[in-house]
Image 1 (cartoon, rainbow, N blue to C red):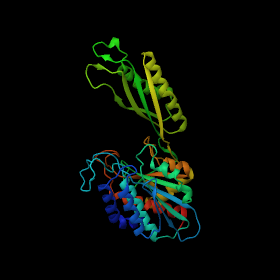
Image 2 (cartoon, one colour):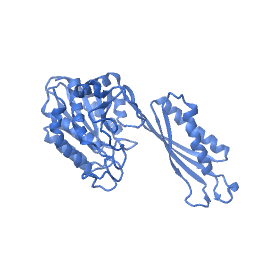
Image 3 (cartoon, rainbow, N blue to C red):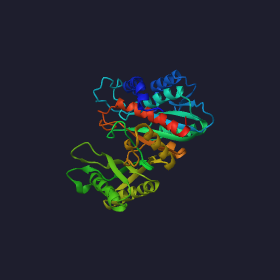
Image 4 (cartoon, rainbow, N blue to C red):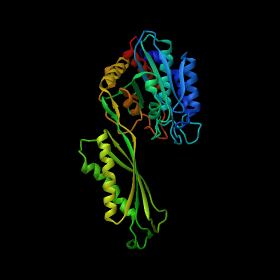
Length: 389
């Protein structure tokens, strides 16, 4: 049976891949160098069925087992970076100014490549493994996962189940976290324009001040969470942008507000979409102003299926032991577009420990290469668990 020691033998090579990707990050769908690198590595492993150009720069590669007929399971890694100026100070820091791998996607890609190399030379399983290398996870709409699903990868490659992973700062290296049901939240975004009447800041009584109204709206939106939802429900409404005049002595005629909504279910999404404009309109009207409102449904909640979660737990436990697998991990309100793949096929999403590093999306973040054997090992153990040896 394979163990962590098996994948420590691949760690040096996988570290080289990971650090090369970290030095050469690319954004959204513009992953030409990254996709070429991945495709070349897959071909060098002896994998013959490689399809590129899915959702522009996505890749799906098939490894067929030699153990007879069986299902095809999908294993997904995201490849894109973020528009952040790196401040990690590492020798392998980004060479592309203002772009960095601040969310571990370089590590995700390297771990799936390592698993691909192992599986390509150890095909004693039935069925097939579909390796899904996805662009544009960090893009809201249309995201890479959504586009790959819309372009038919599940049917085209006969994928019956699909699995994803993400590294998690704060979880020790060598440990995993997962839970059935919602494991990550949905993401919706909203824009509100408050239209008042501008004028001189010395004469506010001659204006309809949208700045004051915006302050009331922002506070009112917090009451939607604290006073209009069950305290046991999960709803986050965060105002993240406020744009008004750029002078000390001007009351503007309009103010722009923007923010994000996070929930764990469709009913709360619908509630927020209804309540936010109602509150904003009511407050603005009381002051004699009007609003324009836009609400963008972005990413649904990431929902783990019960049966597939049990398989994922079994795979992780066979690699690191039951004590190192938290099968009731705390739900995160962060969003993950792998949810679109889980809407198309049953599966599960697991968190892989990255140790006490900076948080994701932080300029100081870096993937810890000591996590590589655990990610590679989990993928292989998952194949062994579902498709057998």
